[in-house]
Image 1 (cartoon, helix red, strand yellow):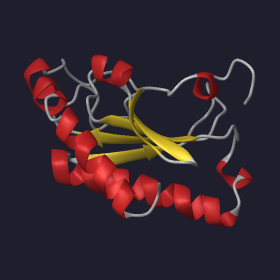
Image 2: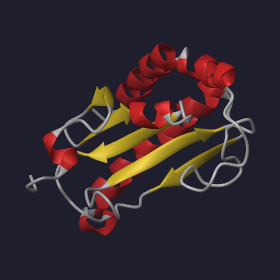
Image 3: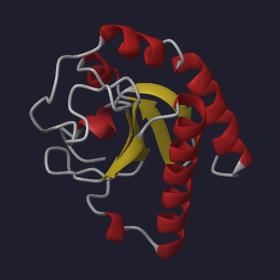
Length: 148
């Protein structure tokens, strides 16, 4: 555990699933910004870079990222999935898995870019309403994949 690391000291979002090596969270603060399909795959141990993991752990981590992407695609039918592992602000290994929609305020630009249009609260609410269904499917699929 690294001192003052927000991902060591907390879940990093609304916990959806936890395994011995990693966890999946829904990024509620990003949903409030207009991105209701924003999830994170967070490595439990404090490591700053993907290459810090052993080869088997890298494969394990990416298998989880792929499951999260697949579930978001099947449950939310987004226009695109964005994957990012930045770590500039929080140097603790985590992947952003973001369902993007043609109606979202920033599409096709990144969620961190300036908005391209006004937000669509009705569309955002419709995606948000699927949250428990998405969470349930994520738990099922991550367990089925043997990632727990």
